[in-house]
Image 1 (cartoon, rainbow, N blue to C red):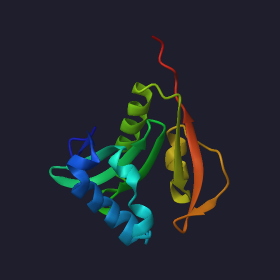
Image 2: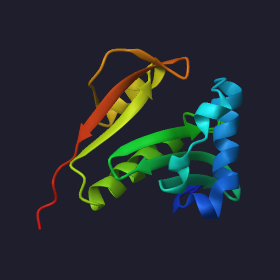
Image 3: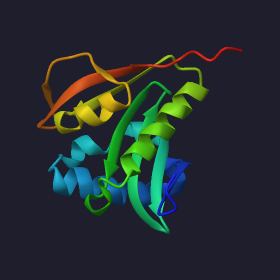
Image 4: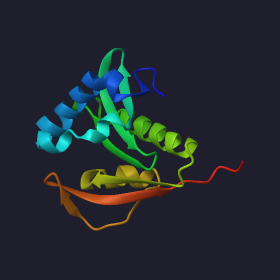
Amino acid sequence: MSAEFQVLQVTWESHAPQLTAIRQEVFVEEQEVDPAFEWDEIDAVAVHLLALSGNQPIGCARIINFKKIGRMAVVKSWRGRGVGQALLDKAIAICQEEGSELVKLTAQTHAITFYAQAGFVATSGVYQDANIPHVDMQLQLIKAVN
C-alpha cells in the first residue's frame, strides 16, 4: 500500500458522500453514464471500498455478496498510480476471506488487460452496458485449506 493513499472498507451509510463524489465524476460526468443507471438499491447492501489520499476521496469499488466486484473507479488525476490495483487486491482478498471461490466483474474493454493481469479471464464477448463496451470476466480463487 502506498504512503500516498489508503484503501478502507466502508459502508454506503457511513461514506455515501465520498463514494458518490468519485462515481459522479468518473461515471456520470466523464463517461456520461445515465444517473438513473448509476445509482441503485445495491449500494445500500454492498460492501464498499474507498481510496483516500488524506481526506480526499480518489477511488472506490463495491462488492456484491462477496462474489461480484463493481463500480470500480479512480479519479483521473490518480490513475496509473496503483490506486486501482490496491482497490482490486483488497476486493479480491475480502471475497476470498468470506469463502468465495469465484469472483466476477464486468470490465470496460479498455480495462481488460488490467483485470487479466490480476488473473481474471473473459467469459463473454463484447456487449454494451450504459453505452460503454464491456466484457464479463471472472477469477477463480484458491480455496482456503482449514
